[in-house]
Image 1: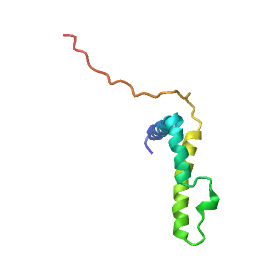
Image 2 (image 1 turned 180 degrees about the vertical axis):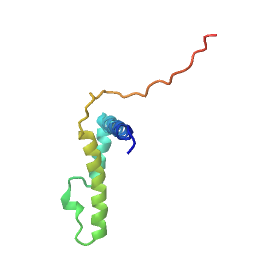
Image 3 (image 1 turned 90 degrees about the vertical axis):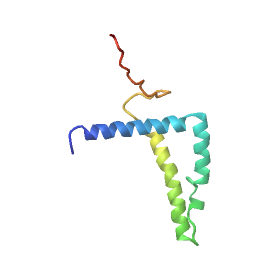
Image 4 (image 1 turned 45 degrees about the vertical axis):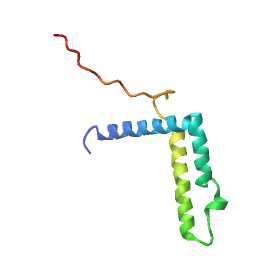
Length: 98
C-alpha cells in the first residue's frame, strides 16, 4: 500500500463518522432515526424472525443491520474533539495585486 493511503482513508472514515453524528445528532435526525428503528425492526427480535419465510427473515435482518450500522457510527469515539457544526473550508481565491 502506498505511503499516506491509510491516513487518507482514516481521514475519510473519520469525516463520514462525523457526518453520521451531525445528521442523526440533531433533534430532526433523532426523530428520523427513531422512526427508522421502528420500520427496520431494530432490536425487535420477536418480529425479525419469520418462521414461515426464510426470505422475509433475511430481509428483516438486513433492514435491522442498517440501523445497527448507523448506531455504531453514532457511538464511535473519535480522537478529535467533536464540534456542533462541521463546515467545509472556504475555497481560497487568488487576489490580483497588479
